[in-house]
Length: 65
Image 1 (tube, helix red, strand yellow):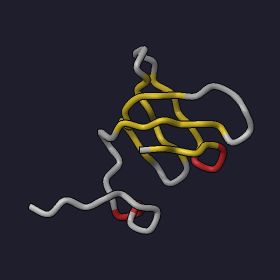
Image 2 (cartoon, helix red, strand yellow):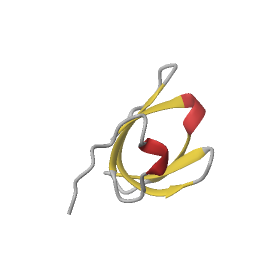
Image 3 (cartoon, helix red, strand yellow):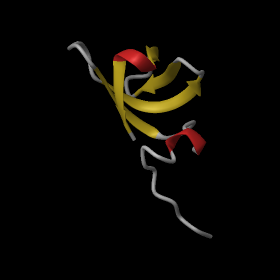
C-alpha cells in the first residue's frame, strides 16, 4: 500500500471525513479542534473534542489537518 502525504495540491482529491482538524478563523474568534464528520462545497462539519458539532464556512476559516 502506498501512503500519500496531504498537500495543498492534492487536497481536493482526498477524503476529509474522519481526519483530525484544527480550524482557525481568519479574523479572530474561537479555534475548533476535532474530527471532520461532514463536508459540502462551502462548509466543513466538525465534531469537536467536547462533543459539540459545528459547521464552519471554508471561506472564513483556515484548516490544519
